Amino acid sequence: MKNIRKIVVPIEIRALKTANIYKIEDSGILIDSGMSNRTIASLNDDGVKLDDLKMLVLTHLHIDHVGGAMALRRQYGMPIAMGKRDALTIQSMQDDPEGYWGRILSFLSDNGVPKSVVEHEREMFSDQRRVDVYAGLSIDRILKEENIDSNVSVIENPGHTMGSISILLRDSNAMFVGDHIISKITPNISSYTFENDMLGNYMDSLEKIKGMKPKIIFPGHREEIRAVGKRIDEIKAHHYSRLKEIEEICLDGWKSSYEVAGEMRWSRNRSMKAMNVMETTFAVGEAISHLVHLYNLERIDLKDSGKIVKWKTI
Image (cartoon, rainbow, N blue to C red; front, side):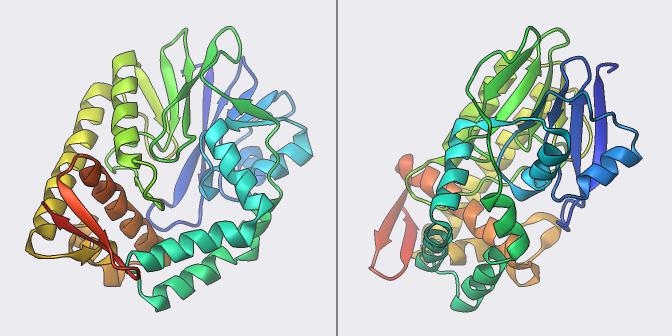
């Protein structure tokens, strides 16, 4: 589309390798920022004009979407905007980083993740590059479901994160969805708390987008999607299949979330042993999101022995 400029930038996540950044030319809006300060060099190499930018919109808080934000803000002076729930999460990271990451690590331990993996996670969370990104990230505008200008609207779609948002161009019915919907791969839906039914939120958000009938979707990774309803149905079918798989895994006795994740089928037939630390965390988080959803549907039971939470199909 003439009004949309897509820039593909490298990222340090082996399962993805690249991320998409978009410039909406007539609105002066940049969507997402890649994983690091090197994003500016990628944008310059691609010939993208940056001096006319009015706003940087972050679709959600993950490092591969926010990592280049502050460098862009410092160099070009553009304000940074983000959905409310993700902005509040970043604020909690900044107010008490040790407490924030500590709660996640404790939650992983409570769900049966081995101490060695948790310690590797601690090292990853302590990576100074990522600490600095979140510690220094200033959000200038909190976005709710609203119109940014005469053509650009914000759509709230929690699930991939609690504050995940999409951007709709009303004149062309084109939508920028971050990691909410991706072609060929299913976005990771993780829970690191029992309080939020992330999968339930995600499935509701998929139906919301489907009902809006966008003509084309521009995702945060990979290629554009034109058969939007079909792709949404494929993603929903994947999660229904995964729910059934987990019920079957939990039929023969109480199991921790880590044990459930270890028995689940993963893409390319990977085992948990073949996953790196980040992938292991995402796998366990995805197992938990499905377990919590099944618990809320009263199809699976939970018991907390005071050490490790375990699950069993009812």
